[in-house]
Image (cartoon, rainbow, N blue to C red; front, side):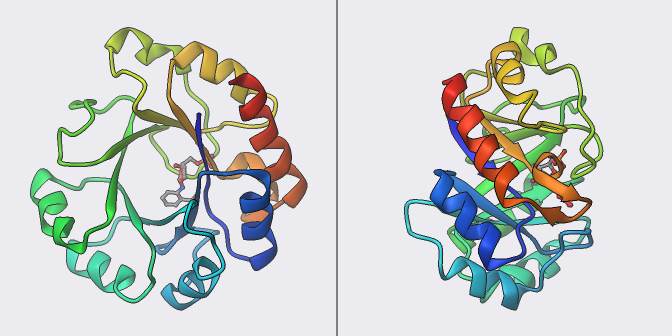
Length: 199
Ligand SMILES: O=C(O)c1ccccc1N[C@@H]1O[C@H](COP(=O)(O)O)[C@@H](O)[C@H]1O
């Protein structure tokens, strides 16, 4: 089970995620309580071992800005939230990054690869809000295991969410915070352990 810890902004919490066994760590480069500068993302990502995927998370900016934001970070994946079109995905394909399309569970085209993405992340309508949704809704949609579940997950809910949804991975931000935008090393460790225990 793939597990990503998102919205990291300190060396200590990045280390906690890596040491706990996370498969990916995310850095939010656009407006958010977790926003970091490209320079900070580059510095934090430099300490991440190669087996852990480093992900640039962006929302609400045009493709030219996306390209500028990720340019010198060294991050290896790009997670696009919002109204990005197939043409937008095509316009970042040459960056050579793993492309993650983040979409609301209510969106049309919930099919992995529909926009040329490598991974499909299915989220609540408002990303990073900590809002949960009915995780069982997509089980009948036949998305397979190659999609990642996000939106309001926590240490207490993630095992049930995995069982209900059939997702092959999970992504968390708010649920591993002690206050909005402040990651907790303990909660990061507990979250990854809960995912591993769930299978
Ligand atoms: O975390 C943010 O602030 C954020 C900002 C802009 C785009 C995405 C963001 N986070 C992503 O939101 C989901 C779910 O987060 P949560 O666990 O419900 O807080 C996750 O994919 C984050 O990568």
